[in-house]
Image (cartoon, rainbow, N blue to C red; front, top):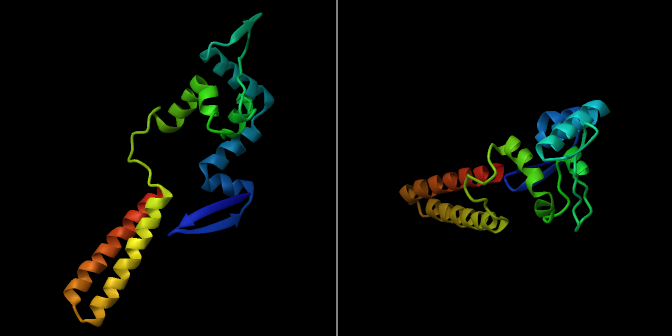
Length: 168
């Protein structure tokens, strides 16, 4: 399995076994769990979800009415196995079926945190960091140490903010 790690703006790829990937990544843990489930447990889970979603009942057995995305062709059962959607239209196509999973993961169905930083904002932060580092060098050369201390503190603060944004 391949794990990609983003640290201080640099990307590192690691190849690890499935067990190690499951230990580091919640997504890989879900995949590993779904791959080790028995068919019987999977059917029980699907039937329970079908009941909750208003599935069709035939002779006492529930068969979930599983949608398929008309844009990318992803079947809802495939989504449930991987927890990965195929395209942005899947949100509309699977709508109410996704709400239970979103609630399980996030305890809410609406984003409640800070707005995400776009890559452009992260690039702007890098530019500000470069400018501050140049200003720090100039302050040191001019022996303006009071200014150098203020600039150093600004750099540290910006670096902490950048790390927090990247880590999410």
